[in-house]
Length: 322
Length: 286
Image (cartoon, rainbow over all chains, first blue to last red; front, side, top):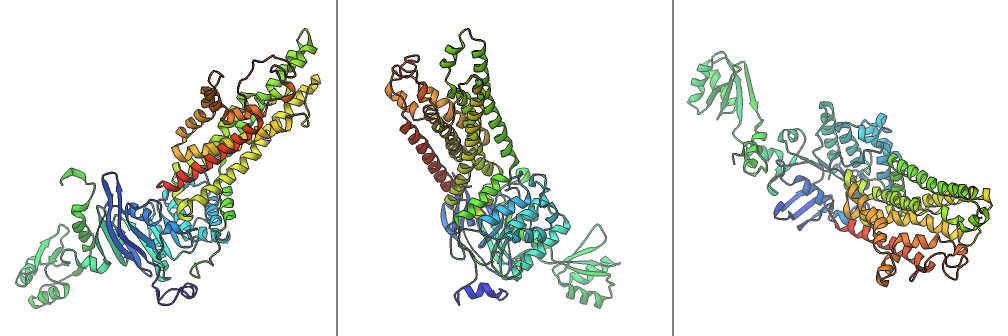
């Protein structure tokens, strides 16, 4: 909350916490299927929180319950202490991009955003501002039906930003964006968080979150797997790997074996060492006079941590080897 | 994005009405349905008047033929207004179903969680637009048909007994049908299904409750918007029932719809349709 600008703080009673999203025992059943099962988590302001889970884990159902679009079968979820459906108008409280396709293709981007802004009593100039911000100013008068998925994503983000809300939700926002778009969106999320806003971003790809999220809420089959900082989650993963390049792999193997370092030779000529960290490897190699060309610590274990923890929680899998 | 939240404004219903007006205005498909519906309805009425003029001209006894024709009837040909009912119901249905089938409804309710207010604003816009539309169609077909009849000297002025009431009744058929279309759209939530349901309820259902054999059957039929319309566009100066001005040219109707009943039927359908729409949209997940 430290980064929050003046107006927001002044309006809030002193001592009260920021605008958190709080789910308590949130449950949603569809017939006999339990889409979300007793989910409890808190999303705090000032950081980007990644909402992760395999396909069918219940992410979208949860986001829709936060927005009051579908009613929980049990439990509660509040934004800033209030169930979202109790708000008369939403855009100044929560900005959301759920599905870029949730628009009427027959309207222009300008008409779409103008209607949203007008209904929330947001001045017309904000429409032009957000269109410029997401890079759609030139396409403002074109029919949304002719937009690419990436352009629709940008339009959805524009709609979420309209009310300058303290809480923002994005469901799979990186889908369909080109590399430049992905970089822009990540920068945007970080900036929104730095401004003290609460930012929740869902994804089914851990790799997307690696450079985006600070905190993680991980779910599988509708239940909570982890809710913690990204670094803590990564630490749960497999042992760390170090990639080493040397002209004499056999000598390296011999040098590290005594200390418990296992060397695997890769097809590209490099070696992957597990069981020792980079500084220890360097020290042992130096003592034995083994020449090293490259020494890199691999931290891609985040993806592995995710796969390991959600392995038995994936709803749909190829091959049926369950 | 500079300051944190925008200055909070008090939620105003008029803002929602303005937003819904932007939505209706910005859809080209609506204009197409409007234009085609109006042209077809007016053309059917004009053609009816034109062929009656032809009938008089080619008749052996033009004077007798002239008095036998009810000039008001050509302005309000049933088929033309059945088309108007379907067009109006479709426009009302599009306003709701268009949001559900495109997914826009989620964006709408995420922006305005007060769903009942959204539906009320939508209904207000649809009612206003369709009242203007219905008035245009009814007034045009009245003006055009009576202008055609003026060639034979039997055209009615708008001040003629029952003429203004007929135009008003025919005009209001449009917003009533549109609200029924909205309600069916909220229940069915599927474009084709909604139009089928609208044709069933507005056009076919009255047909099932005709005839004077059983009073209750006729009374149900009398409670239909189409029956109310038929009563309102009746020419009081051209009463062909026994004892009427034309004296017994039409069989007696045992349980006719009175003018008061007709207005009540319009009001009741509009109110119930609005209520059904509000409740259906409010309760269901999107």
